[in-house]
Image 1 (tube, rainbow, N blue to C red):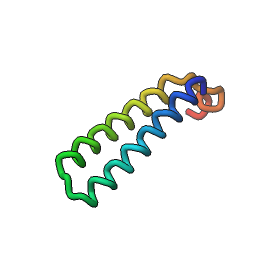
Image 2: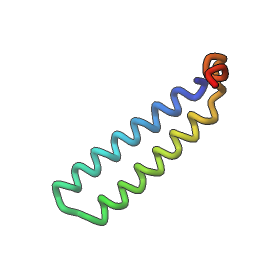
Image 3: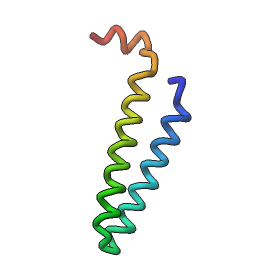
Image 4: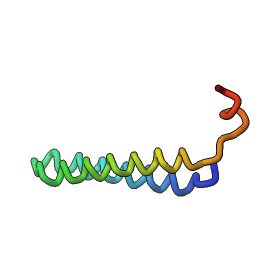
Length: 64
């Protein structure tokens, strides 16, 4: 994978957002929880797209 660092940073960002959700869950701030959940979903989509952009190895190409 060429964008390994980019994907790693996105995953770290996702981890931070999940900690944010945990913090606001204990405080009961529903609007902030929903906002952060949406951001996490967006980050997951970005990560999936980044993985799809990566060139396939010969092993991945020959799998099908």
